[in-house]
Structure formats: structure tokens, C-alpha cells
Image 1 (cartoon, rainbow, N blue to C red):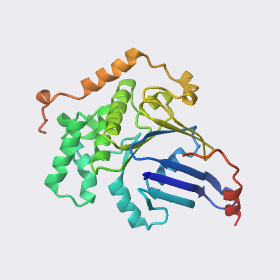
Image 2 (cartoon, one colour):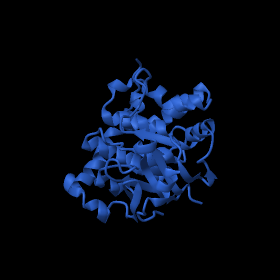
Image 3 (tube, rainbow, N blue to C red):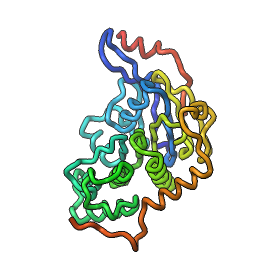
Image 4 (cartoon, helix red, strand yellow):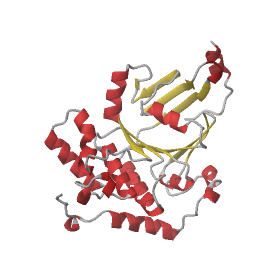
Length: 289
């Protein structure tokens, strides 16, 4: 059974002459365990689509099934509970709370779930070790590098064992080495069976995914499966905007990951299916009504 099923999903913003059709009858099926990149120019509908899939917003029309359950018309409190338990987010701007240390930030979603303090700390600590930050548990976010902050955000996204991880431009604020570390971590998480949706403008990042969905003007214009490690044909056309990745770059990515994640004996804790573009007639008729 697919984990995500969107059928004729449309999203309309505004009223009257200010009406904007952000998504136009989107059909999309994502199987459990896929690593899918969503690509497209600014304004193509990528963020709107992710907000709907992540239950941060509702569709105007159409149906959305998450794990076989129709969630498109649930009440706000029901959506919040499902979102808390089944969706993990990784944002470009990290969104860690500045007054909480790294351990407290990672454990925070478990507070809202009602998990006891001891279990929260134990779970969060284990995840920080997994992402190579066991020696930064008691640091404030401002004392971390950009790459370390994003790895902490990934740990926070995983703390509730979500069914889906949505990563919205997770490397947008990072240098090339930190970007490699973050993408290698997401790749490792995918290998464990997690479903990951990656929003990106960078075609090089499609090397880590097994499927790419392309959007333009609120519709899916192309959907292709691709071998992990290769940039798909359509994404390759945008490579003139980015430096080509060489074998040395691949080795550098592995090296960066190994340097970023300390071994246990050196770790010390500080104390202190897509549809072709169609006409918008159906959706626009609904707007006129």
C-alpha cells in the first residue's frame, strides 16, 4: 500500500480577482521507503505541495490518503496529532529554539507527545550520537556550525520515528562539505527504510534519491525513477549552474562525514505516479462557482 496518495489535489489562494491556483489537480503516489526529490523553479508549487503532504495545510479540492487513511478533511486537532506522530521536518533555516540546548531541542517533540523526561533524554541522546553530535548535547544552537545545527535538526525530525521525513532545501544555508555530510546522513536514514521527500533546486542532490518529480506552474510535468548515484537526464540540463561532481568529490563526501562524526572513544560531553500537464479548466470553473 502506498504511503502517500494524492488524487486531483488543487490548492487555491485568495478570492475574486486575486485568486491564485497554486496546485492544479495533482496526482501523485509515493511508496513506502522511496527517496523522492521535488524540483522546479520558484513559484512552481513545491512548497505548497510539501505543506499539504506534511499536513501543515489543506487542499481546496481533491483527496489525500496517508498510509491508506483519508486525511484531507480531518479537523485541525486531528491533523496536528497525525503530523506530530507521522511527519518529521528538516528546514533550510534549521528552526532550533535558541534558548534550549541541543539535547532539549531534539527531545522537544517528545514533550508534546507526553513521553517521560528520562525516556526523552535517553532517546534524544541516542539520536545525537547517531548523527555525530554526542559531544554537543549541552551546547546552545548559536555555538554550533551550520552543518552541526542541521544535523541536530535531522535528529529532532527523527525523534518521533516518523513515517515521512520532509526536507525542505536542507543544504540551502550550508557550505559544500556540510552539505555532503547532511545528504550522506539522509541517505543512511533512507537505507533504514524511511520515506524521504527532498525539496531542492540543486540537481547534484538528486544523486542521493531514487526518484525525481518536476513541477512547473502548479502541475507535475515529469516524474522519473533514477539510479542512486546518478543525476537524471532532465536534472542534468541544470548542471551548468553547479560544479560537476567528480570521483574526488565523492571521496571528499565520505571523508567529511567521517571527520564530522567522532568515534565513541574520542567523544567527550561538555559539562557546562504523476500526471501530464493538463488545462486548468476544471479548477478554474470551481473558482468561478
